[in-house]
Amino acid sequence: MPHDHAHDDGFAAGRGAPGHNGPGRAAGRGAPGHNGPGRAVRIGVGGPVGSGKTALVAALCRALRTDLEIGVVTNDIYTTEDAEALRRMGVLDDNRIIAVETGCCPHTAIRDDIAANLDAVEALEDALAPLDLVLVESGGDNLTATFSYGLVDRQVFVIDVAGGDKVPRKGGPGVTASDLLVVNKTDLAAQVGADLDVMRRDAAARRGDRPTLFTSLVSAEGADAVAEWVREQVAHHRGG
Image: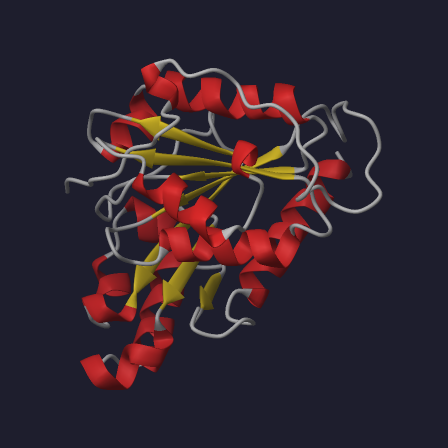
């Protein structure tokens, strides 16, 4: 499924690495240097176009930025739309957000040829060390989209109720194999006739013990459960 984002400081376009600035650093952090086993936890955020990936990334940044040092890499095919949106929202300092213009199908850049994304992640880690967390947002794709574990440590797949309550039942690697499935826009369920209990049942049947969380990002607390899951991944990483 095509996806139309790109980035003004698109990494594929050969832009340089970001530098430091003041606001946006977690309180009380020391001098640059790697944390834990040696680098930030890298979490991929994938899912179909319009499912709410950028909104989720923004909500996670707001929820976690006072506790964790965060960087973000966004992916778009031809634009820098998602990175620009995050900067406009002011969720992090601008230099903590890098855009990758993939010029190809989204899944190619996160799974098959990860070089541009890996360069962007490592540039953030080098320039802004110590980082605790790097969020890598994929361009919008279909239910087969997954990240290479050479690029990320964990992956989140975001679907939304507007696609219908059949989506978890349809499966696909994004639904079945992601470390966390997020069913977003639950506030729209009644309007689109989606049964959340059906989605919950089918997700459990498809995913077994893998967690599924239901979110509505129209409220400030809408991503709290996902943020807590992310904190657990960071704590696990720090513990080695």
